Length: 172
Image (tube, rainbow, N blue to C red; front, top):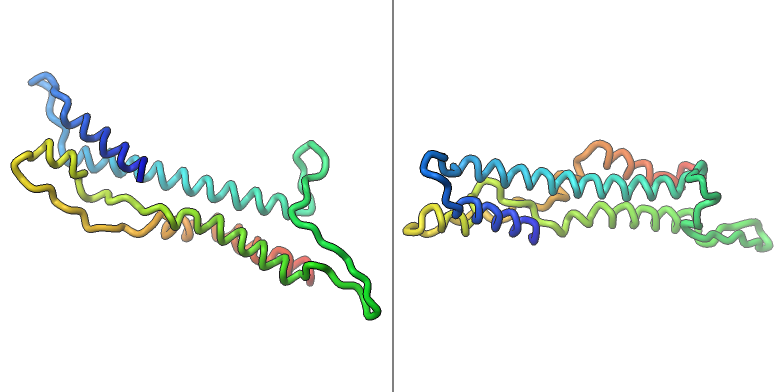
């Protein structure tokens, strides 16, 4: 919301700026294009942050983790317990997989809290500058969240599928 408000403020300043008479004024289509550009940049930033977080998680769970500084810190601790019947892991494989699944879902759902921008309506502050005698046109409301697009990205889906089956595949 803060970034969208900053873009709207920037557009308001651009429209309110008095150009020389020979310079054409900023058109409504250019305003929409600028807002769409920043909306796309916001989406790309969220997508890259999500990808990096999931890749880091996948890398930490990998048996061939290498960063040149020795062994990585433990991602989780597992105890082997011997009882009279055999050996068991604590926490169990299922509990470990549930924790990994929960972490992957939490990373993915971060973008669910960020509303997608209305890129078809000119911001209210800009409308008031362009047409001070007309009431501002209201947008259509929520465009959903950025999660809707991020969750459909192929790379994201691939890493999520790898993570959600990572421990189960090692078990088999």
